[in-house]
Length: 426
Ligand SMILES: Nc1nc2c(c(=O)[nH]1)N[C@H]1C(S)=C(S)[C@@H](COP(=O)(O)OP(=O)(O)OC[C@H]3O[C@@H](n4cnc5c(N)ncnc54)[C@H](O)[C@@H]3O)O[C@H]1N2
Ligand code: MOO
Image 1 (cartoon, helix red, strand yellow):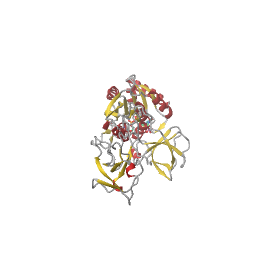
Image 2: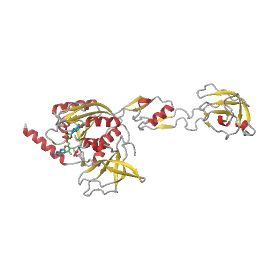
Image 3: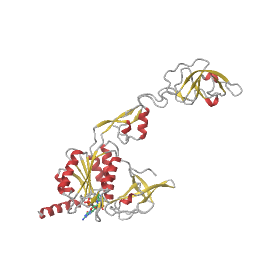
Image 4: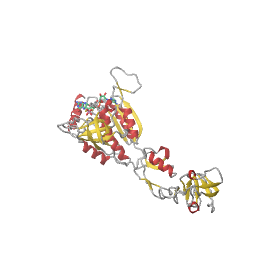
C-alpha cells in the first residue's frame, strides 16, 4: 500500500516539474472555456450585472412627443414677436396643459396655452415663453414682455433618438445606465445569458468557518467567503459552498456532486504535492481532463485547470489565500467572462513608485494601489508580499504583475496592472 502511495507521489512530482507559462494558461482558458448559450428573460430590476443575449433597440422615438422644456406659455411666435417691456403683448389663456395631459386641443389663434414642463405642445404653437418673462400664471390674460427665439423651449419628438436605434448591444454587461435606458423605453424584461453556476469547495482540517469557536492551532477559512463574493461580483451564481476535511473520499464525493450541479467548480487547498493533498488524484479519478497544472507564477504556482466531458470547467487553486485570489482574478475571472460572452477586463500600465521585486523564473503578481499624481497613473505596491498575507488587500485597488527577470523593475518603470474588480477607479 505504501509503495503505491509513494509511486503516485513520485509521478505527481514529475508532473509538477513542467510548468505552463501565464500566457499559455490564458490561451488554454480562452480556447477551452465554453460559452453558455442558454438565455433567460429577467425583469428590469434584476438585470444589474447580467449580460444581454440580444441587441436592445428603441421601440419608439425619444422624445415620444413634442413637449415643453419650461413652465410658461405656448404661443405662436408671430403673435408675440414684437413684445417688449415698453410694449407688452397680451394674449388670453385658452387652455392649460400639465405633464400627463392626454387630450390636447389645437391652440386657438390669438391665444396662449398655460403649459408645464413635459406637457405636450398643442398643434399650432411653436414656441414656449417661460413664465418669468411674462406677467405670470396669476391671471387669464397674460402680458408678454419679451420674445424668446422662435421655437425656443420645445423638445421635439425624435430629436434624441429614432425608433429602432440601438440602446445596448448583445454582450453588454448591464449597469444602472442600461437599466435607466430600458426604463426610459418602457422595457420591463430583457433576454440575458444564463449565469454560470459555480460551486466552491475549500479543503483543510485546519479550517474553521468565521463565527465558529477556534482552537489555538486552527485558522479561519477566508477563501470560501472571499471567492464566493468574487464569483457573485463576476455576474455568476454560487450554487454550492462546501468546506471539507482532508479526506480522500469526502473530497471525491463533493467534487462529483459539484461537477454535476455546476458549470464551474472552484476548489482551494490540497492541490500541491503534500502527503494530504488529495485534490489532484480526486480530479483524475473523476475523469477531469487536466489542461494545466503548475504555472510559472508567484504566488499561485500549483494552480490547476481542467475540463470534463460534459463541458464543465474546474479550477483547483492553491490554499494560500493570496495565491487563491490571484489565480481567481487572473484565470477564474476571464473564464467567467468568456462563459457569459464578455471580453475579459483589459490590463493597462502605470508608473511604479518603487522597485518591483521580480522573480527569476516565475511571473510575479503583487497587490498595489493606483492613484493619479501629476496627471500620471502611479502604482504603490502593498507592503505585504507573502502568499499567506491576505492583509495585502487592505487599501489595494489593483493587481500588479511583471514577467520573470533577474533584476527588479526599477522605480519609475511602467508596470502592468489590472483593477481589482470591486475597486473604484482612483
Ligand atoms: N514541497 C513543496 N511544498 C509546497 C509547494 C511546493 O511546490 N513544494 N508549493 C507551495 C505553494 S506555492 C503553495 S501555494 C502551497 C499550496 O498548497 P495547497 O494548494 O495544497 O494548499 P494547502 O496545503 O491545503 O494550504 C496552503 C496554506 O493555505 C492555508 N489555507 C488553505 N485553505 C485555506 C482557506 N480556505 N482559508 C485560509 N487559509 C487556507 C493552509 O492552512 C496553508 O497554510 O503549497 C506550498 N507547499
Ligand atoms: O506560489 Mo504559492 O502559490 O507560494 O503561494
